[in-house]
Every structure is written in C-alpha cells, then in structure tokens.
Length: 285
Image 1 (cartoon, rainbow, N blue to C red):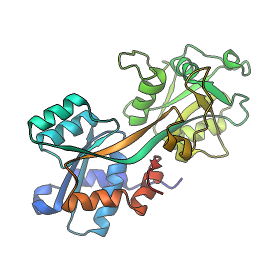
Image 2: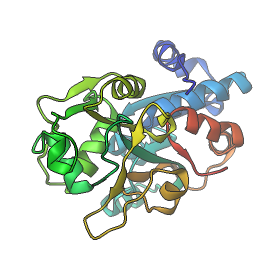
Image 3: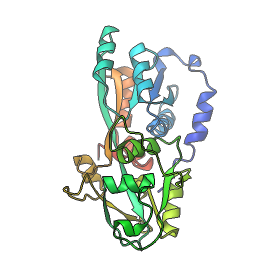
C-alpha cells in the first residue's frame, strides 16, 4: 500500500515552526493519541496544502494527555483511541469545557501467517499465549511441528501498545502480560508483512490495509464458544471483529470555524482516503 513517506519529515519541520507566527484564528493545536499521531499529521499536511495560511500542529503523548490538554485549554482538538472517561467529563465541566466526541476512523488489526501455514483460525486466548511465548510450537495449536517466530511492532508503536492491551492482556487493565522476550520487534507494518511472506514459521499483526496474497490472515474468535471472524472492513464497522476499536477527535462543544473546517476535512472523501493509507478503517465511504 502506498505510504505517506513525507509524514515524519513534515512532523520534524512542524516541530521547528512556532504557531505564534500565525494568526490565532488561523492556528489549530491537536494533541493526544500516539496511535493516531501519524494519521493526524497526514491530515494536517494535506489540509494545509489546500488551505494556505492555516496552521495545524499535531503532537502525540497519549489519549489521556490529549484529553487533559483539551480540558485545560491548551489544545483545540484531542485525539483519543478510547472514549473519554466519566471523571474526565466531570473535570471538564468544572472548568467550563464540554467535550464533544467525533468518531473519525476505526482501528482493525489483522493477525497474519505465511500462506503455507495450515492454521487459519485462533482464539484470543491462543493468540495471547502465542505472543507471550506460552505457546512456542505450531503443533500446540494444531499446526506442524515448528517453532513459532513471533513478530511485533516496536514498543514505541501505538499498534504495539493496543495489541498488548487488547490481545495479550485481553482488555484487562490490571494485566501484566508482555510480548515474548524472543519476539522480533520490527519498525513498520511493511517490515512485518515482508517477514511473514518469507518465513513459514512467523506470525505477526498489522493494519488491515496491508493484507495481501503474500500473507494469510487468521480468523479470530473471542473464545472457543464464539464465531471466528474475518478481519474485514465490514466486520470492523459492525464490531464483530474482536481486534478493533473506534478512534476519536474531541473538541470543546460542537466544532465551529477553523476547527470545524479541519474536522470536516478529516471526514471528507479525501480525509477518509488518508485513513486507509495510514492503515485504519474509514467511517465514511
């Protein structure tokens, strides 16, 4: 899939530019989810190409950081890969802020193996055991007698964090599970795709946009009693696919003016095409 190779260069340039050089009514500060930061930067880059004079600064730090910044008035838009918490809403109201939620994308991760691997479906429990190293041979889940090669994104990846929280720890906020010490940490989804394509023992995960004939996706079930679900856009949108979640922008009240202009762009046809390019699932077709 075509990538926005200029995103990181663009981000570095932005970090050197002071928003003070722009009129206050032409500047937007966006903070929050590390999972969404590349998407936000990609939106900002294309938006500014189309709207000369407008300035959009995007920084990460995590969903909580973004929401805290929105509540404290130090950003205009918060990016969040989770719903705002009740205690955050209460704090916002105390400060006269009215968080307004806008779903802008969906995050669906595909688990993939080599096409020659006979395994085609796994439960979340089995995936957790594989990626933590409790299961280390394919024969333990009905495959061939072959050591499993676990592939993961690097620890600074939001995808890595999400997979750890929702697959390894199965959504348990108090969980302590970590990736197997023997896991190979790769720098990009493309690197995982390439390794799986050339390694019959490997298993990895990436954004659904990377699925190709060079890898085979695994159907995933919540447990042994549940149906095994394909990682498709339709199944992510419906919520059937278990490794998926919505991604949000939060504003103070319904967006207006320049903020509305940017949000409208994110939800436009072009903005949602960028969602696909950055390996998320669009909410608007």
